[in-house]
Length: 222
Image (cartoon, rainbow, N blue to C red; front, side, top):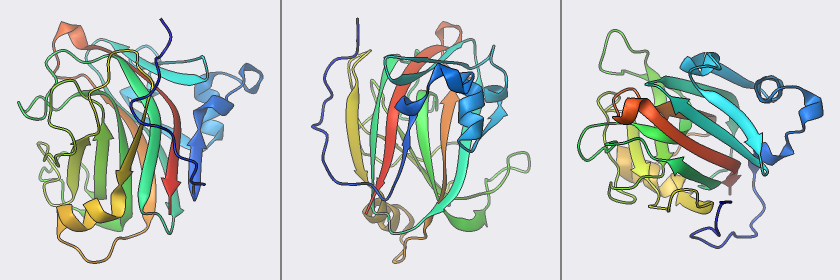
């Protein structure tokens, strides 16, 4: 079955900056080659096409795992004058048992937004420090728009579920980055966006780490 209509109506506001995965054309090479040409870097398990599988179908970038995996597809670029984000995406197969409420911090697909360049401690000697970030994901059980803390990055990271779509449903999520940043981190000034990542984490979920999601477009709005 194809993706259903989204949960939210798509707005017409022109983005300050956007990443449109539907622009991919097979003539431009493999999906991974195209993403690399667009400025994305593959980190951890995302660098292994057998661990985190990517394909393009129906104007959507599909991401799938069939075993426990953790990987990032990172895009680093400064973007100023952004207050909101809009994402067109969905989940085909939620990681079984994943829940920030229950400390199983996994997701089929997360969009990280990084703020500024100040490196904050991760809380572990074995995990690199990071700028402030907000991680956005779709879930099937956690509370919507609650800022969860993960196992690390308590000073500079929060994780927020943006909705409970049905499996296979294409939805449009919109989120106020600026207002949330000042609230989550008790700050008055919001640093410029310094990068974003697509992340997949099924390292602790059940069902042998199976998960699948898709994404069409990310827009940063004034």
